[in-house]
Image (cartoon, rainbow, N blue to C red; front, side, top):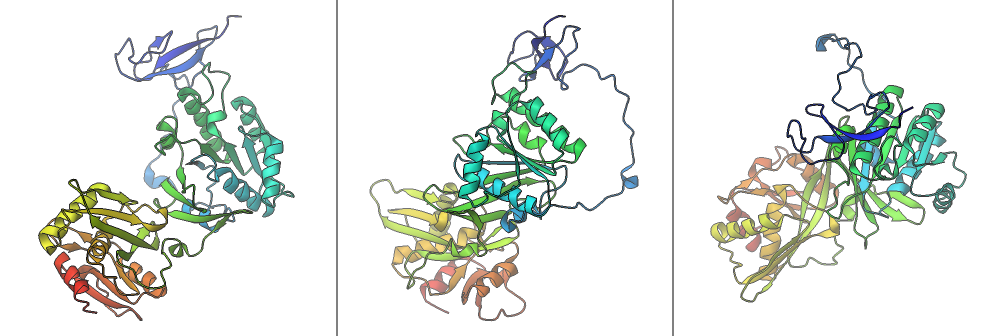
Length: 459
């Protein structure tokens, strides 16, 4: 019997090569060669090769004839995680979760599997980075030493798939996909071809056997998921686990979700007993000042469907020959643009000042609704005068000096009023039609109106 050998097949033309090349020698397309194994009869064992399929054609249906069905989700028992997932884990769904080493991915998933198992679900935790004893030690530390979660310490793909088919769990966690390897490929575990092929086989298994699979992925130095980008396209949901090393708080953010909203976040606090959901995350991002301080302004941002109150802090100080503009949690290029608008349309000059802006709590704000709060905090620091107690602001600033509306302005105002804020400066287009109890709203059209309103204390 002839020995199997590794070949590289072009996904564009189906041509083969004995070694990997950046450009296919047949069709001259770049980055199209993928690793596969050829048996003695010359048949490729890679399902993604360019060879023609001998299977019969699948039946074609009209979209109008296909009956749409509601998806029954399996709640994880962790409210903040369910929020990010869109209500729970979907049967046959594949979830990819990434994050820095030691941030709590394995801890959170072990807690979720235990909660599902206690409600009668059949779960399996496949660990490729730890032994079963190490997983048991972590479970004991989390108070889960009597947990009924099944554990498999294995890294070979074929054995993992065989166990999944035999055990038929409702939910399985693969921790992590970078440690899994297939014997059909000669490359090392964690390589692009291994990660791609192993994820493809596990995804196919999930779709055909109705097993929900959660893949844990490593991240690069830049914070992106390691491995090919096709991995993110292959799965149904992509979650990022974020957090500062010096902080006990963690954020789980949905980047992609075929069965729910994207850009949702779940907020957790790391405790001795694992990760606990934070019911009022706005308290994390607000500093506890006894009295108002100069350079501080609170804004209401949206993370998915959740309004969050975040404190924006600014420090304006005398500069040397080259003024610095530094922002943490906000877009630095947008800060430079806002300073130009502030000078041109509101008469507030910072050319000879260093400007530092920070979003408290390590949160990252990407929406332009933070513009007005940033400018008000800069003016407050520059003049050394604190904004009133219970003051909030939000709104996008245009290059012409106009204050543009922010989406879901009513929800932002209601969240602020619920947390005891009493004065708001907002875009005129976001002005509420009915008064909000306990909240005085000042609607403005232009940035100079907002600056004069605050400068002269017209509240």
